[in-house]
Structures are given as C-alpha cells and as structure tokens.
Image (cartoon, rainbow, N blue to C red; front, side, top):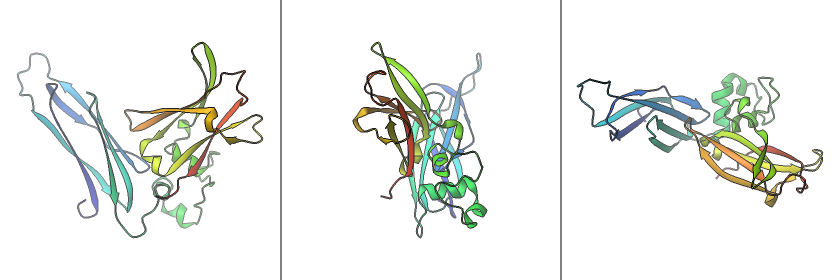
Length: 228
C-alpha cells in the first residue's frame, strides 16, 4: 500500500528458458484481482540473452477497507494466490463492497441495497449475481452425468474464488419444485477445480441414480455468508 493505493509484485525464476513475459491487464471480479502472463520462448536463431528471472508490479488502485484476493497465473503453469486485508473503520462485507464496485455509489445512496434487488432488470437477484461473479451467464447448469454405467442428476456452476467469504451457495432438492429441502447426504459436493481465470468450478451430484433417487429436481439457493 502506497498513499492508499495497492500494488502487487509478482516474481519468479526463469526455469524454462523463456525469452519474454507479456503481462496482461488486471481483471477485477468483485473483490478478486485476476492476472495472467504469457511467456514466450526465444525466437529461432536469436542470440538475445535469456533473463534469469521475471518480475512485474501490478497497480491495483485505491483499496477501500475490506478483504481482497489476488490471483496470478502464467501460460507456463505458474500459479499464486494471496489474500489481502485492508484495515479501516467498519470495513464493508465482501458483498457490500461488490455492490459498491458493480452497481455504483449512486445506486447504494438511493437506498436500493437489498439482497433481492434487481437493478439491471435481468431477473437475477443482486446476491445471486455477486455469487456468480456479476455475470448471469455463469449460473448453474443442470446436467445428467454417467458414472459406472448409471445416470445421475448434477449441477455445475462457476464462481470467483474470492467470493467464498461473502456468499454461500446452498444445494437444495425437491420432489415437485413447490417445496425444497437442504440436499444433505443426498448430494455429493465434488472437490472444486481452480481455473486459469481465478474462478473455481463446483459440481454437486446426487448420490443415487435417476429412477432411484426420490429427488428429481435440484436448485441452488444463494445466501450472504455470516461474518467471521
């Protein structure tokens, strides 16, 4: 932090005889900073010197009080994550900070800050958009998967890794979609897969096959996570 603005320095040894690193711009999703560098080899026939290491400073801008996640990946497989807490008076929750970043101060000052608000009119509540990284196209997709010769109902969805502290995605099951219950032991949550853009893929799969399971419907209910 320098004069209220944050910087992140990424450094690593050149173990692959790379010639150049092209540092991409910082992508912001909620309270997550996502970065990527493309490493290129020495052009054929070139006698240019090979650097022994690479280093780059990313400018993160003004950081208000809150919790942040910085993610770095390279085309050569380098990966790093760092959490940063910026102290302040009554720091906002990750959800509140996302609303400020994504919806703007004017929207919040108008008093429209409820979890179920829909300021952009796309039919998706604010809290759900937060859990999905602010992009409705990243919502859950129902899927029939086959394992060991049987078919099972599953939900797969993607979320920014940094949203874990701000929202919980609860899996619910139903017999008729008129009433839903917590999935509990009926559903298995598969290990999350961390992706190159800093998000993670979540898979929730019913344990019993179709035709045997008493739950033909599944849904995701997003709630704001309780403060630690």
